[in-house]
Each structure stands twice: as C-alpha cells, then as structure tokens.
Length: 270
Length: 270
DNA sequence: TAAATAGTGTCTCTGAGACATTATATT
DNA sequence: AATATAATGTCTCAGAGACACTATTTA
Image (cartoon, rainbow over all chains, first blue to last red):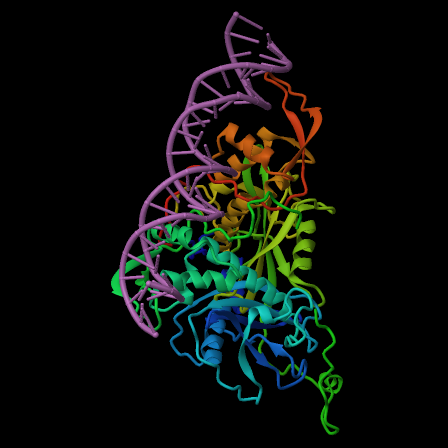
C-alpha cells in the first residue's frame, strides 16, 4: 500500500501538501447525517429471527426499526456498527460475525432530513432477550417469516419504519446466499454443535433443509468446514446421541451448498 | 411497502408527527462529507482496463485516483454516480451497468477531513479515450494488471491516491466474481457479438479463459444467456466467420461459470 | 419392542474438464 | 493445399438428488 505520497518534485514557489492541508477548508457544502443500521440475525428455538426496536418518538412513532445510530468522527462505520451491536444486544463480547451490507441514500428516506445510512448485517448464535431501550421503546426478536417483507401476507406483522423493509429484504437475502458459499452457518450455532443442529440452521434460514444424508456428505467432505470431536451430545428424549463438532478454519465453500427447491434452472429475468 | 404511518392513536396533548417534524432540528452533530468514487471498467483491445484521473491538486497531487465527486442533497449516491459517469466518460447515454460496491469510511482515509465514500463499479463496452479534466489533470485508461494492486510488482505502475488501492482491489474482485454467476460479461461487448469475443471477455477479466469447447456448451445451453442471430461476423484475415449473437434476457447463471485454474479445492482460510 | 433420532451406502443424473475431430473461411 | 479460426463430439470424473438401510439411544 502506498502511504508516502510527498515524492513529486516541487517547484520553489509551489505549495507543499502540508501547507495545502493546513490552509484547507472543507467549504460550506451541505453535508448529510450518516448513520449505521443493523440487521442482527439469530436463530431462537429453530426460528430465524431479527432484532427490531419499537420507536418511542416521531417520526414513525410506534413503528419498528432496525437498531442503529449516528456515526461519529474518528470512527469507521464498522466501528460504529460494532458499538451499536454491543449496546443493543447487551453483550459486551459479541462472538458472531458483522459485515457491511450496503448504503441507502434515497432522498426522502428519512423525513427529518438528509440522512444516509450504511446498513450492516450481523450473524449471532442464540442471543438473550434485548434490554429495554432507555426511551421506553420496546425491543424484541421477530421471526423473519412473520415480517411482511414480500407483500402483505401477515396481518399481524409489525409496521416497519423508514426504508427498513427494503434494507431487511436485502439483509435476509444476504444471509440466505452467504451461507451457501461460506461457512457462516457455523456462526449461528454454539462453540460445539452437532450436524443435525447445523442442518437446522439451513432449515431455519432457507425455510428448507438439504437432504440429511447429502448434507452430511457435503459437510464432512468439505475440508476445514467442521472438525469432529470425540464427544457426543447428551440427549434427553429418545434417539441416538449425535457426535459433537467444532468449526474448522475454512471460510468459503467450494462448490457451494445448494439451496433445495431451487431447481437448477437456467437464469431468469430479474 | 408501508408508507402511511400516521395510524397510531394520539392523546389530545400529544404532538403529531407533522408537528414534530416542523419543530425538528438535526442538532449540531458534526457531519461528514459524502462522496462517490467510481471504478469504471472496460475492455480495450482485449485488455481489462479501468479509468483513472491524475490529480492536479493537493492532496496526492500527481497521484492517480478513481473519478468521483460529492453527493448532493436531493440525490441518491446512485444518481451521483450516474452523473459522474457521464461527466468522466463524456458519454451522455451510457449503455453499461452500474452498481454500488461498498462504503469506505476509515478515519484518515482523506487527509482533508472526514470524508466517507460510497464506491461504485461500472461495466462498459469499449469506451473512447476520456476528456482531459478541466483542472489540467490527465485522465486515461490503465490496464488493471499494470496496477500494483497486490504487492509491488510493476515498478512503472502509477501511484494511487487515498485508499484507492483497497477500493480497486475490491472492485476488481467484484467484477471477476460477478461474471461468474451473472450474464454481465455481455456488458463488455457490443450489441451483437460472437462467442469467441464473449470468451475473450472472460480471458481479459480473469486472465484465463475457460476451455473453448466447454465455454460454448455452457453459454449455448444456459437458456437466456445469448440468442443466436442469422448473421456472421465478416472477418478480415483467414478463418471461419463466426456466428453473431445478441444478449438474452437472463441475468443470472445457474450453475455459475467456473474460473479455470481455480481447482475445485475445499475452502481455505481467508 | 416400539419409537425416535443419528448416521451409512448406493444408484443415477447433471455438468464440467480434457481433448480429438470436423467445418468454413482466406492466401 | 496450407493456414487459421470456428464449431462439434465424446470420454471421464466429481458431486448432488433421492432414498433405502443400519445404528444407538430412551420409554
């Protein structure tokens, strides 16, 4: 990476970069507020869920929104997202995965003014119920399939604030596709886990699980996906106790885990 | 999409959302400048190339940067990117593809202050040489492989400004992977094209082309990727004249076109 | 032993890699 | 005819889908 950049030849009367910066003013361009929004996903009792916060204030009072907040100077949007993640989940040492989704900037997306939001997605194993926000607003996990992300299916779905329907749609699709070609499904289970547990992650996120036998073959044969331990999960009611595994050091799946039902049809119009 | 959100019951003394917004002030949070940066790719004489601009002013005077500019109020970052794209390429009706890459916000990435950049990637068929910038700076196409994106390989590579090495690395990888699982390779060729031409797109972008015969089989059998015309390309020197094709209406490739050389090894540590 | 869950074996089909062969043009 | 490029045919192998079968536990 090139970091020194003072190397160009400089005529005597010319300004150096240091002098230039010292005299530089950003001018009076209008500037937007920049926020981060977080789609924090977990699987609770086999249900693919996302954390939402009920707004206690206008605008969108009583509607549900993704947790988020302003980005401060001297921090990256990632840092801001990690900070919000800790605050909202109440977990100081968050063990999951966080990544940037995309930036939403459509004019009018926030009625208060010019607000650009950098959305992030987090994957986490079973998290506790969230702290109640200090602004008396509610915060809870919602099953993703209970949200009306694709049309008005569920009359009891919470109304979503801002453009968070769009963000959530993109976030859900990101998670669904990311567990196809990476090992991130292991972020939704504990330190050790069984293969049926890992398979239930795919079931929860995709709404359909790969065939049991083929899933095992795929996971076991993909070097570095999981590592077998010698212990078995103690099971309460009936059934053969499953072997426990630990995540391996692979990060990508090559070839990808295929979503069932997605018949290998040729590309379609989008 | 839920757009009406005035439906919650409101006690007599309580503020309505309209009243709230009328009295709302964004406060005096410090706000960043937000810019867009563009990685505009094309293929010129079989060479995968990107448009860079030589900076005429500090900071990074004499270094090469991605074209870009400030985002204005009342426009999305996509609109800003389209606007810059037209300005920088000098093409009013740009026929290619533009998409958001990701947002770069690391503190210190711009020595002038707090600047957050939303980077975009554009795919275009052979574009003309760019206009000279009005600030007397140079603007030209650079072969991607002549840039030192992965270590100091080429001593004649142009020095890159800001964090544009990182952005370009991400942008190149985006293009390389996007032509695997979408039909975007057709954005690099003209209205009609031959299969060998399309294959040379993969050769240019990946540095290696799929086997000729297997490539044909894949493209032809993927419904909606290309549509055969009845004409042939008139050829100047020797050889059988190839059939001309037109792009189909498919957008995704299922299964993906595989990069050659990438031995189907299991996932590795990243 | 029945029920429940975990785990194995195997047939088949699709699609990619490799590479030999045929087709159609110019000089 | 020689050369050059386009297009086809075919053998093989990896890996996914489907599903029958075996294993290990509790009630």
